[in-house]
Length: 103
Image (tube, rainbow, N blue to C red; front, side, top):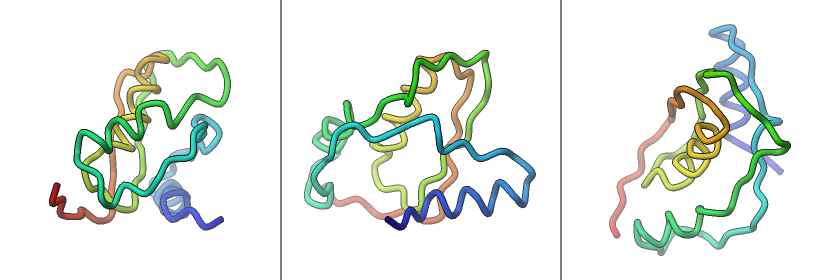
């Protein structure tokens, strides 16, 4: 129930006066832990894990995705692909921590 990335996004959004949209993406497929997966397996694991919440079209808007820990980028890449496919012109990832990947 606790979403660290959302909590960070709300704080950052308030500080920089940018709206936080938690209504755009949703997880549609539960995925196993990625801890012991290779980079390729992580990307495959996330490929169909998310979807847009509704038939959304963007008019070249820019988005910032917030991730609490960035490891291989599989999760943020999957989300960014959905947003750009729906018309986003740019997706930037802000992260608090960068984990070292050994895979």
